[in-house]
Image (cartoon, rainbow, N blue to C red; front, side, top):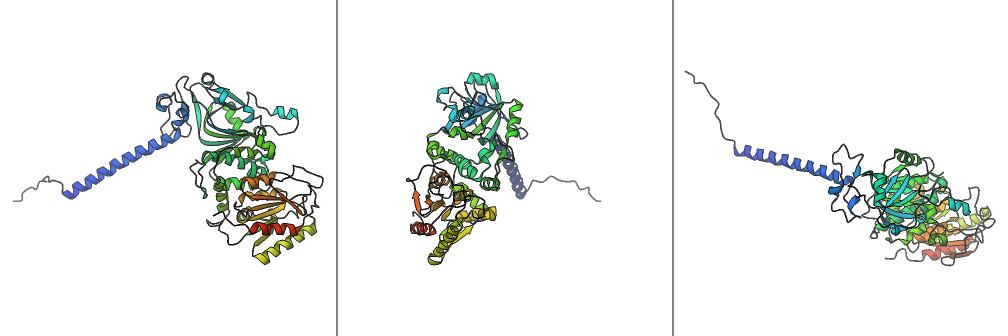
Length: 488
C-alpha cells in the first residue's frame, strides 16, 4: 500500500543564507543612497549661507528659513525667514561700475540692498544708473544718475515691511548688465570691454587661477540684459554670440522683456550671487578717466595673472584647436587688412609695401605670415588664427579685437597704425591689460607705453589715406621676435 507523501520542512542551506544576506545588504545600500540623493538635491537648492553666511545673529538656517526638499518643489524655490530675520546683503567686492553682491533683492524692477550698516554700502552712483543711452553734456549725465526707482539701501525693518517673510530664490551666479544696446552690439565693446571687465571682476574671487585656467569658481548660471532685447546684444559680425557660447556654453540669458515680466509679478526675488555691471557707473572711476575704458576699473581688484586663460582656452578649443595649440613651432605674424573696407585704410602703395616686407621676414627668418581680411574668414577661422598669433597688426579698427585670443608672452605684440597725430586707447589698453606690448605707428614713427600721446581724432583719422612705412614695421617685428618666446 502506497503511503501518502507529506512535505517536510528543511533548514535553508548555507548558500541560501548567504544569498539572502547579500540581498538584504543590497536593499539597505540602495535605501541609503536614495536618501543621500534627496538630501543632496535639497541642500543645493538653498545653501545655508544664503541666510546665515553674512548674518551671524542667525544660529541656523534650519531654525528660521524653510527650504523645500521635495523633488516637485525644487524648480520654483522660495526662501522664508522669521520676522525681522531678513537675510542681509553683502557687498563682496566693488569698484566703480563693477560690484559683486551676495543676497541681493529685486522687487518691481528695483534693486534692494538690505543692510544694518547703510554707510558701508558704496555710493549708488558708482554701482548703477538709469541705464539710458550715454550722451555728453550735464543734462545727459544727470539723467543717468540712479534714483530710488533703480536702487535702494534699506534696513531689515524696511525689508520686512516690503518683502514680508519670503522671497523667490534665484540661485547660483547671475550677471546683470545694466546698460542699453548702445555699446553692447559691437565686437570690441562686448568682448574686449564688457565681457572682459565682467570676467576680470568675477575672477578676482579666485586669485589662485593657474596657467592652465583651472579655477574653483562656480560657473556663471545666467545673464540678465536689463535694457537690451534678444535682437540687440548681437553684433553685425555675429562674434558676440560666438564668444559667449564658446566660452560659457551652459549660460542662459534673459532680456529686457523678461526683466519687465519679473517686475510686473510683484514678488520679491533674492539672488544668491550677482555681478552687477554698469557703464555709466564705471565712468565715475579714476581709471576710466585715464584710459577711457570701463574695464580698466576692474583691474583695481585682486586677481591672478592667468585670469583670462579660462576664457581664452575655452574659445580656442571650441574653434577647433587642440590641447597643444600654444606650442607653436614658429612665430606667427598676422596683418589684419582693412583695404577692402570703406574707411580707415592705408594708402594702397603703403599697404603693398608692408605686405612685401612681411613676406621678406617669412622668407628670411622662417616666420608664418598671414595677410587677412577678418570678415572673409569664418568665425572659427578668425578665432583659431588669433589664438596662434604672436604679432598682430593693422589699422585702428574692430578686427584688432582678436588680440584678446593671443597668448601673452615676451614676444606677443600688437602694432596699430594711426593717421599721424591720432590716437585712441581701445587696443592699446586691452593689449597691456593682457600683459602684451602695444606699439602705435605714425607713418615711420613708433611709440609705446608710457610715452603714448593723448587721445585725438584729427581729420584723416577715419580716412583712406593713412601713410605707413612698411620697413619700419618689419624692423619692429624682427626686434620683438628676438626676445625670448617665454619667461621660463
